[in-house]
Length: 335
Ligand code: HEC
Ligand SMILES: [Cu+2]
Image 1 (cartoon, protein in one colour):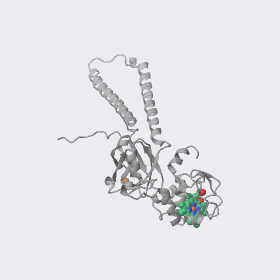
Image 2 (tube, protein in one colour):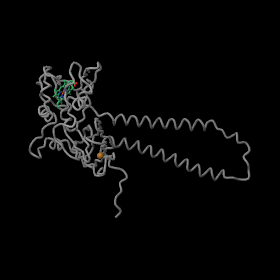
Image 3 (cartoon, rainbow, N blue to C red):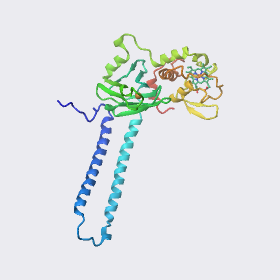
Image 4 (cartoon, rainbow, N blue to C red):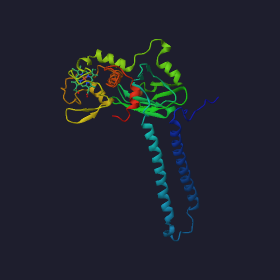
């Protein structure tokens, strides 16, 4: 009747295996040297315990080969650990270009998730298996941390900043989601689930058919906010407004009034909405009001999704909402 005590969480992502291999290698290496050193201490203290005989020529004890050996071996081992760890880290830090995008906002004490297609969830994240998923994180209050042990991924969600992590789930199931950064009295209850589904089931879930009405996409929701908050009064689809046109701004280089330039990534767009005076676009007056406190982080994400959908290309009419995921995949290197 002893309850099962799993020492290791299930391996449910493509990264789980490689992360565990490095971990076990480090454990084995540490165990080997710990036992070696402990064994030698015991063996030597018996062998060289104090006796009547005095050692005659202590200067003979130097051994060049031994010196070289215990210098070179730790060096090689630490380089192996470094290379292995660095390669894994680089893989973990770089979401593949064809990743599905989802958004998670930490808030004491819950996770608010958004899908580009519009479905929202609290403390649950539905994802398809067999496809990389990039989670963009931020926080409305303090630092939280998005931790899915079965996927071997963990990333802080920092207020005022976007961070991200990615994973590719390998088998359907429900996996624990923890907040791994102490964030207040209810921190321990800031838990949720990542639900990995077969791609077809995920599509059905995403389009909301199980509930009837199709959800409003993030870009559509952002477009509504853009009207409701009065952004349209200054930002038109051409440069006739008091503010610059936002068509094609996302991902492009923006000239600033101090002569420098900046790539309009999501962090810049976010700052432009919440603290417009921080970096003023060249050729414009700093008249844009701040929206800090007026919009939540999830709404900022929707506004950004809308701005990123504003593309002036070929058949897409200005202001029409286009699909962002496919664009991100084809534009990986363009910015
Ligand atoms: C009173 C007019 C006005 C309103 C309302 C306004 N803006 Fe602006 N906006 C500007 C001006 C002027 C600039 C350029 C100067 C600057 O960077 O502050 C600007 C800059 C921006 C930029 C940076 C664009 C670039 O090319 O660097 C973004 C993004 C933006 N606004 C989004 C918004 C959003 C979203 C809203 C609504 C929530 C909004 N603006 C409401 C006037 C406005
Ligand atoms: Cu938390």
